Image 1: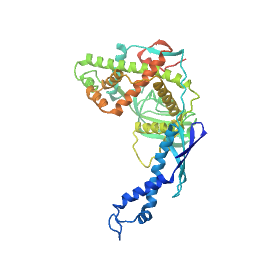
Image 2: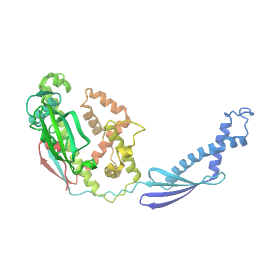
Image 3: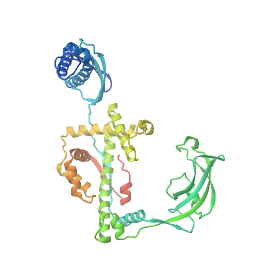
Image 4: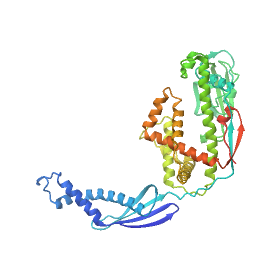
Length: 440
């Protein structure tokens, strides 16, 4: 087998492979001979069909099948011979597939880059430091009560936090526009669902009252014809409803999985969940800063397009599923969720993945079994039967491998943090949960 390799650009390689004709011909003959024992043709006894006839009837089809397999096998042999690591599938272009002549084809593909890891030194990381207070627990329980509460009609003027039922007609220069009118529409004031000024204009109105709102659409509004447009909305308020929170009682506790122990057990359960959320949020913010620094310090690392495209496809599919999408031949995901939406994040993920893989390999990091077990147990603790979840992970190699991968990533981050200047920032629970990390 003859192999020549050419670097066409960056990570792209062009591999020309020549395979002796004998390799293809021998395999074709072997398959035809094997098939001759099973083929039934009029005028021939079983197993007695001449090879000449077999070649005439089936030779072309068998040869095509063998050519595909030989190109696939020889490509694998060639990249091993040349010590290449393809990123993604090759594009194969046959050059000579004529019978009796050596097979020749060209395979074009990208290779994984050589990752030269830049050492991180003396970088700053802000670590939020907070605790879960009784007041924080009270706030969360109030949220639960609202989630399980009910809306009741009231006879008073609408205010922030109320749910109003309205009819409205929108016009632009006196003409109605698409999506600008509705009847019997429910709207929670303060939700920010409508354009600026709409909800504020309804506050203070009472049932039966009508009002015309003169507003403007934002300059960045998604509909081109309405960007920055001056419009009027004629609004009629039908009803005003206020939220009546659910009582803090056994019925509420049961809805959140606490069957015994009353309010004391419920508060303890809520606090434990908040502590877990706080821990994960702090770790996530610290890790994000390390990853940002790692990414920025490898700006020149070239990433294979094939890997970016694979990541875009995965991210697109994940987003589609998150929004309740299901497989349909009528849906054009390229138009619905264009690749450009995901390109920057996909490139970042791939680049960081390559860097992390190099760090894992260079430092010979293996997933710590105790840390893997702790991670699984932490995830399982949020379920009604934790042991069942633990058993599930340890019985499913693919699921466990995902946990091991995360643990190894965390171990890499821990190693990098040894060279960081960690600045503890005292803050509230809510700030720690929502506060964006920053690094210098």
